[in-house]
Image (cartoon, rainbow, N blue to C red; front, side, top):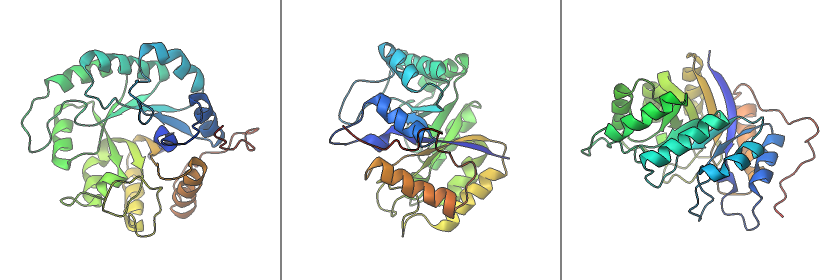
Length: 267
């Protein structure tokens, strides 16, 4: 039976006029009962939070939290990959990456897997789970065939947008090795990262099919709420009401005792 735990992506805090500090972001998510999925940058800034000098702050802010990290997206070198893999190991985190960051060829493009092989070896040496985020389905399958240790991150928003393959095809093909989910919604036109449960978004039967299919596996899965269009407290409420009250997904995060009065207050 699938075991699932939940985090919220720091994408949630992008574009705030008066942003919280990183420590306040983590405190807010912890008070809601969630872990955190870290993105490498604050929106609009170039500094990578996985650089070694930032590790003490990352470790202190996320103490006792479930942590996942989204790989750098600036075509990281092997040395930069090594640094973020070590960071993930220090935090006890898995890493979600895409084809481009691993220099993996897309389905119709030439290329080799030598760079990716070096990264996969580094992840293995550090006991870090590496998850390939949803991209063109044939390319994901090829990558999975080449690297047995590679897991998948199934992004529900991406799977709802592919004109060639259906949502259920993504679920069927990737489910055996899914270790991470990006839980997001859209109207089928652009990946705008709305909270799950849109009226006219991903069909209810697809959400049910995803849970039913994964529930037949023994995967340990992190479900990451990846949302950005409105205020964080609103998005978390909307998403959790749909996923846990309507869809009846298991293991609802619980508000931490003593933190019930903590609210999002960007000052």
